[in-house]
Every structure is written in structure tokens, then in C-alpha cells.
Length: 335
Image (cartoon, rainbow, N blue to C red; front, side, top):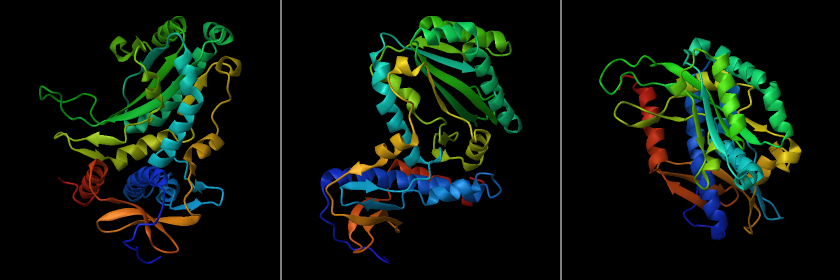
């Protein structure tokens, strides 16, 4: 297919709406992967960045009415992370909502520089093993306590504090744990032991609060790192160099970890097959192959055989502004 046709195909609205969302995040992920790949040519993740460029490039609608594609499964890919979040919410969301109470716990240590980040990530994992091997934790698991542990990492790029003085944490990385736990007793114990194991950690860096808002339990399934940064003027952009440092440090590490026994949860752990099922769209559209393309003023999925427009979006809106500004910063680094 060398060019698109202006004519819209006769595709059901329910499929087109879902495809539009896929289209939007395909555009976003394609450009994020390109910035990661070209800004970090020597990265150990370069092959993965390149693979994300081709993630969900072709969507096949089968005779059985299923829209399928091939996915890169990388944690920096917006499409694949949406698939993962959907699978986690489907599997665990309702079970968490059924708990009489949930506690949200945050555990932190002092920020570190890029050179120390990988070792710090390993340190977090070792600290958690010590907690998980404790008698109190193992007893809680036997008693049916459940929870979710999530590992996050963010980059601190603010140079100055609000009063204009230099920010002491500028150009550092902030790994941390988030938990949802169904027992305050266990949450208190984990926080207590964490502070015992980390005397250098500050009390105000830790947080324990009751989850008292409907749907708040879904927040833990969001991205493990904030993909978008803000400059001193509040403009949002993608920082490919520092994000690469985070992605490299977490290579091979699990971000989500389910706490509790299978019996207590009443379900198996999430698998890649679950993620694939979430990604598959049911449709009564005519079986065909749809390819993703980007043009000067729009981008979308187009029928490979006929070139007809199946779903298309103009280059406008917040995601387009972020991509445009980020790529402009790469071309003009002194702005």
C-alpha cells in the first residue's frame, strides 16, 4: 500500500473507537521508541527499542471476528503496558475491592545517581527478601492476607527549589516500593522493619494510609515510571536519556509482585496469555489486514489491500504536543 484513500471503510463504530485508542498509543509508542533508540545508540536495550517501533504495526481481523496483532511486550511501550494493566485489573481488581480494608504503603530510601542506580535496585530486592522471609510476614500469608507490591523509579530533574536555591536531589533517581495490603498489622510491621533495615531513610519519605476511595485500588496498576517530565516552564516532554538509565537498571526485574497465596486470592497469577486476551478486540468487521502509517498531518490504520481509511487521527492534542516538543529538544538541545 503506497497511499491511502480518503474513503472510509464500512467498519462498525465499536471497533473503530477501540482502534482509535490503539492508534493513538501506537503513534505515541512509535515516537517514544524512536527517541529511546536514536538517543541511546549504545544502550543494551537498543534491540528492544527497535522492536517497539514495529509493535502492533499490522492488525489482522480473523474470520472468527477477532482483531489480533503482534506485540513487543516491552515495559516502555504504551500499548503493551496498557495490555498488562488491563490484565492485572481484570485478574486482581475485583478481588482487592472485596477486601474490608486496604492499606497503601510507600517505602523509600535516599535518591541515588545514575552510576549507583542498578546496585540500588538490587538492594531494594534484597531488602524485600529479608522482609518476606520474616516470621511475621510468613504468618500473615498463611492467615490469608493479600496484597500487591509494585516497584517504581522516577528521575528528579528539578534544578532549583521554589525559593530559588539549588535542589540537593537534582539529577538523581528515586526507586521506591508501593504496596496495597489487606492488613494494617502487616503494613505496620513492614514499615517498622524497613526503617530498622534502613536507618538512613527519613520518616517523611515513608507513607501509610487507608484506601478509602472507590477505585483507588486501581492506581497501583499504573506505569512503573513517569514517562513524561516537565521543564521549569511546565512544558511536558519525554526525556529519553534518563528514561534509558531507568529501563536499563530494571532490566529483568519484576515490577509487579502478588502477595498472598493462590487460595487467598482465588485465582492464578497473570500470564502473558492474559495480556494477549486483553489486547484482542472482538469485532464484526470484515476480515482483513490493517497497517499503521503516519502521514504529514495524520496517522492511522489503513486497509492494506484497498488503502481505505479504517481509523485516522489528526496530529493534534496533548500527545502530539509532547512528541513534537520532545523531538524538537533533541534537534535543538540548547532550548
